[in-house]
Image (cartoon, rainbow, N blue to C red; front, side):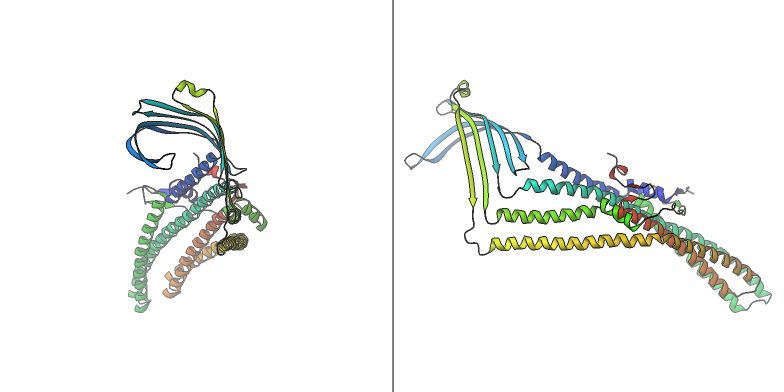
Length: 469
């Protein structure tokens, strides 16, 4: 006989928030969001890069065009080595990229036994794909919101684990209690059946009553078997969810929480301050505005800019490369203007503007549903203690009534029908109380999830409180 593992609701939730498959999925999802944000932040920092072409060798016949415009064939037999060291910086305030670079190149001509060098000691480059749309500016607005969403989604996910654990916990607790009730009922019914057989022999009850009691014994036995199967299934569900090494679990009936008051105003205030949805609303609006800005910036007039300034030198002697530098500079402004596009530009602009209006409408509706959910749940929570107390009182009355009814049946003052009715009411009241207790705890953790606020400790629920790196 294996010893039972005693677990409270709080312990079950604590275990689930460290071991359950949902927790591991949440951590993986959060890590992906974390590294996405780290990648975005790193993209705003200077990047030092080395690009090199290792010695490449070519021995072939190539066609080229000479100064007279004639095509001729030239034999090429050479090796080439090139390296570029650059420091690049994305500029969020302009949307372009500024880079500082140095370049070295060596070519060995085997046919003429000659070597040539080229060097660009210093070069400043600036490039911008669009002068009318700044992608970096929008990324700086949106990416932090996406990361903040991910952090809050993690907290909400942890509260979802609390809710799911509570449901599995009470499923097993109810199965445990129903199994105990079924076992007790079967024992009581069998005892009453033995008493009734004696009373039947003495002629104090009719055979019909004896048969009804015997039928109750058979029904009680079937109910016991059914509840044993339900108990095993619920034990497996909870133990596998918590990743326990045993299914032999014993649960305690959770007690009520300490009394605390939650007003609708406080719940809405915390929800608007803490929930992922609030960040999501802002992010969706910004992304719609970004689409409009991109189309407005590139739809009718496309402008790109390239600029370069530096010094260079080339020659056949390496030591001569670092004197009498030549200047190199270029400036390119590119324009693209659609002359006739049959309304493509206009339709593209109208499309993103319509999508923006749709997003704003949907977000507004989601905000209303968000507030309504908080409002209704808070009002419901304010009455949960009264519902629980009523269910508890009904349970006490039903148990007491059954005990009195059983004694009266033994004394022969009531029929088996009255006893069975009292038994059914007792069992129903016990299950009703457990259902009410489950709803009480489920609603409590739902309140935490909807607000991301611990009303008992009077503090916000944060990521640092849940996961430690």
